[in-house]
Image 1 (cartoon, rainbow, N blue to C red):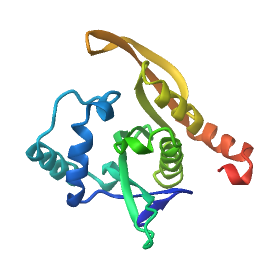
Image 2: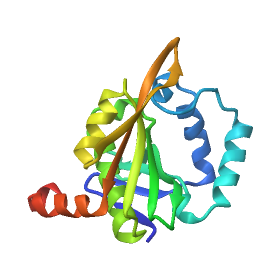
Image 3: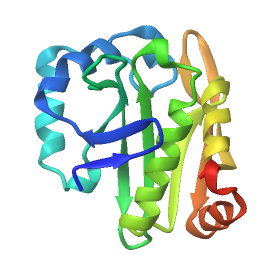
Length: 192
């Protein structure tokens, strides 16, 4: 399966050529404001990260989020990344992460669509039972997107993240496979 297709997006494997875009995104303070990245990354560090990631099983590889460009050739344009990590095969659980690096595509529902597509892949293909994430309390846009995708709040780490002279709570959110399947059944066909 070379691509995972959603309604407006597709997910594909990351390639070495993507490193330039990744670097631009992870070195943009607006993009990393709500990520667990705290230091600028050099090309060398990003290449080292890429090489280390490629040695992991494919289920842990970063996927590139792409949208169809409005060009006459209908080419795809990368706007961010997503992945499963902290996989626990015995308990069939994984953490999920997302970064929409192209700021002009924020607040357009691409994050929610990406999360729904990853949940489908995680539950239907990888056979996970529980998919979870961590999100800063101050990331209201992210929390809304995760809730729209079906995630539920299950707890928090109090004042666990320090940034810009303040401490923030870190919320834990998750979706269980049976909750996701029930939500799919309850949605009209055109909303899936």
